[in-house]
Amino acid sequence: MPEPIEPYEEGRAIAATGGGGATDLAMAEAETLEKTPGGPKGTGPDKKPRSLWSDAWRDLRRNPVFIVSGLIILFLVIISIWPSLIASGDPLDCDLAKAQEGSQPGHPFGFNGQGCDVYTRTVYGARTSVTVGVLATLGVALLGSVLGGLAGFFGGAWDGVLSRITDVFFAIPVVLGGLVLLSVVTSSTVWPVIGFMVLLGWPQISRIARGSVITAKQNDYVQAARALGASNSRMLLRHITPNAVAPVIVVATIALGTYIALEATLSYLGVGLKPPTVSWGIDISSASQYVRNAPHMLLWPAGALAITVLAFIMLGDAVRDALDPKLR
Image 1 (cartoon, rainbow, N blue to C red):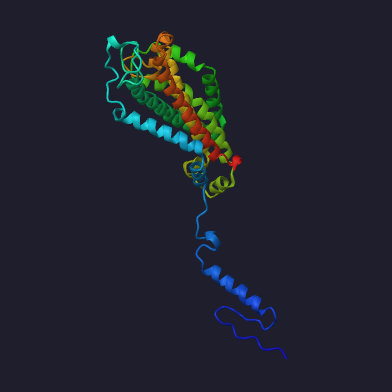
Image 2 (tube, rainbow, N blue to C red):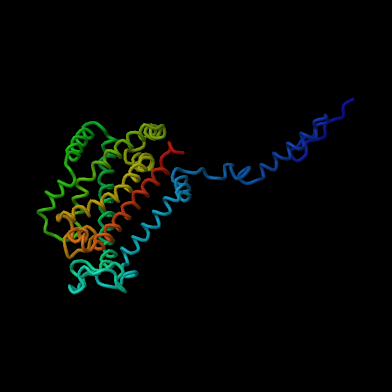
């Protein structure tokens, strides 16, 4: 005659069959998992799921390209804000008696054609280049994202008009446009150059933002928010923008290096920044005629420009790899 089943005790029943031991073990493990916060290995409901940005940051921290480029950019930002940390001289303090002389104690990069210290001018030139690149990128990203995002969200006539305006700006060669527009400017500040870059640079960001918004607004969560009566501003700010901004960030990061190179190109051609502003483009332009007799005048500002542009391009590539879901 089978033995009776023992009473239910502390949420566990012990079967009198041969599998009772296995049943006890399974129930004990279940109770242990229930009492463990977050379940096995912390994967239960108490642990928040990782977002796109947290996954991207985790990948970036493991990417040596991002680390190297980030350190270079951090160094450039520091010397742009406090150039006196590594250069104690005055970039406008020149001595014609030392014109085109090579490296000397206290002057490792030598002197330029006016007798100015090349090392000091190279350090102080980072401030101008980084300022132009950052401000131009912020202006382009803001203007292009707003116009392209609104066009992609509302569509219709607004989208058609903006697309035609974008085509017109894309047809203007950047360097030729700079020669025409900046040749009539007499100011030696950075603002005309920044304004020119924003004027001709926003169409690229606008198209990217437009396509990203069109893709994001077709997702189910946006349609659900619309069905629940969410306003257009709420859908744009809360649901679409956070999920459409990644391509804009990637392109803007890469474009920052391009704008630094564009400023140097325009200054080299004589229509960008003008003396007494200290700029790598100005120094490269003035050193080009002495490249045979004093190559050090061209080597250091050109090398600093190349390293800076390369660092921002490498940073943009690393950010793109981290934010692109297709590469996961």
